[in-house]
Image (tube, helix red, strand yellow):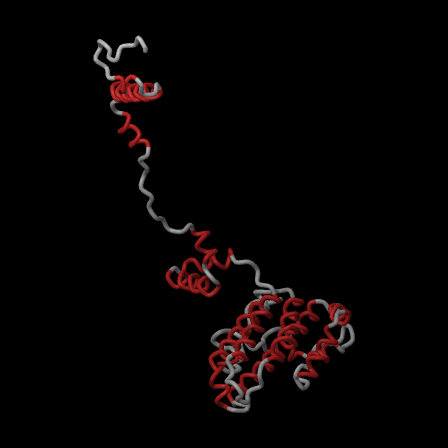
Length: 291
């Protein structure tokens, strides 16, 4: 028999004494944790409020797009409307726009006119012949827009706006050989009138350009003969039934020969201004400035 007593003088029950010692450690850990919590509460009473202030942020408010980003976002049509609206509201900015705008090249103008012709074709009635008046009336507004653009571009390549005769001739040849040949030949009387009047005006422009260029210096005719101008005029006359034969005759003259007086200068130039373009009749108007 064991000599151990069945009870202890301190009054603890045997069941309690026999519990695993790891529970003692857990109790001690709980006491330590509680002590740490009290310590933190005692020495850092404002810790919670401080943390809250650190996470506070300023309000985010919306702003307008920067102008550069706004312009990049606009498509071609929207940008056009914006500039037109600005000019209408502030006419004083027109001169600034002219000064800031890049130089318009011949090729860009030819491309724009070509696009207008293609737009006319795309808007033709389906399976309706161009001989029908209804076909022309469907695209009449676009045809007017085309001739107006031609008027504006042609004036841009004439003196006193442009004194480089090579650019003027480049535009004429490009338009006659690359653009106008693609235009549908409507049978409507109005279109026939505009078409014929346009050829007459372009012929007059061409004659005056060549005449004045030769008059500046008689040997300039050699420059024209050395270029491919004669070949282009031959092709142009083939397509337009000899409308520009007069220009070809100027190139066939011998060096130093006299130029007919009726062809001298620009006094016979038919103005392509917006008030006097192919749509408004063939009024003769002189062009300011001299070459």
